[in-house]
Image: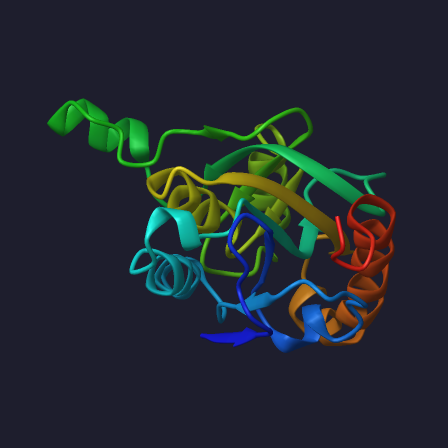
Amino acid sequence: MEIIGEIQPGAPLLVVAVHHEAEHLDTDLPILITGVGKLAASRAVLGALAPMVVEERPGLLINLGSAGALRDGIEGTHVVGTLLQHDLDGPAIAAMVGVDPSPPIVVGEGLTLATGDRFIADPHERRRLGEVAHLVDMEGYAVASAAEALDLDLIVIKHVSDHADGEAQDTWIDAVALSSKELSSWLAEHHGRGDD
């Protein structure tokens, strides 16, 4: 976990997984870099913000990052409305213990994002996930869960970096620079340079 800048009470805090996603963000807003995966993302958000008194916390988390497209034709930058955890069988666990440990999290209007701790490369798995979600990543659900636990508002913005196929793992590092630039454009349009 790393924080670039200083968290300001009531102001937005940007949350990204890795430096590559923050590299081209032209902003004065602070950036929390969580590390890759659900556990790292959750620990970073909770570790950075839970110890703060409520009045010192940011007023909004903005999770920016790259994502794989689970359906053909999805390109560009998208607002996420619903987040799912795809690598934990919540309904099966609920059938056993009576509680779903990973219910969908709705943060607004937009596409559905499935989060899990691995690249999706198998076409059958892509097709299966594509029936319930538009995009896939490795941190979004965890950031949303942490924001929910801290009672913080959240916006999730993802740029399509790959097509969640056999080439995703090999091409992501090259595509993430473009994703960072596109996310910077979205940020400039919606939040200026952090003065809002």
